[in-house]
Amino acid sequence: MNNDLQIILLNFSNSKEFLHDIAKIHKESYLKNHFTSKFSTKKLEEYYEQLIKFSDLCLLVTRIEDRKPIGFIISGYNCSKGIKFFVKKNMIYLFSLFLMYPKFLFEKLYNKIYELIS
Image 1 (cartoon, helix red, strand yellow):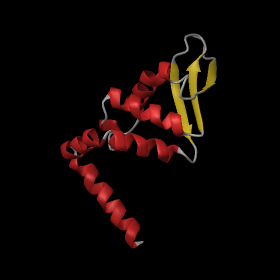
Image 2 (tube, helix red, strand yellow):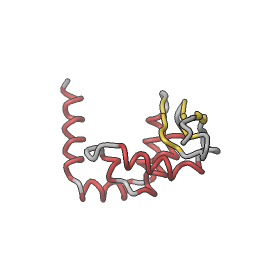
Image 3 (tube, rainbow, N blue to C red):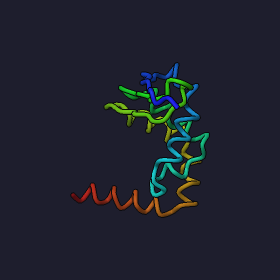
Image 4 (cartoon, one colour):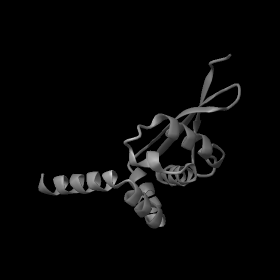
C-alpha cells in the first residue's frame, strides 16, 4: 500500500464530492460528548458545506492512489458565519436534538451564563 498523500484546497464548488467523506471522518473521529456527534450524516454534510463556504482556509488530505480522504482542516475568522447560517437554517432540527439530548442544552446555558458573569 502506498502512503503518499496529497492536500486539496477545498472551496464551496469543489467540496461537494467530499462532503460525505468529511462527515464520515467526523462521525468516526469526534468525541461523543461533542454536540455535532449527534448529527445525522446528512446534517453533517450540510454543516460542513456551510463551514467550507464561509471559512478562510479548508484543506483536505487524501491518499494519492485512490483520492480517499483521511483528514481535513477548516479554519479562519469566518467559520462562525457558516455555523450561524447552518443554525438559522436548521433551528427545528437542532431544537429536536436538544430535546433528545438535554445535557448539551444545559452545558450551553451554563457556558453562556459563565461568559456573562466573568
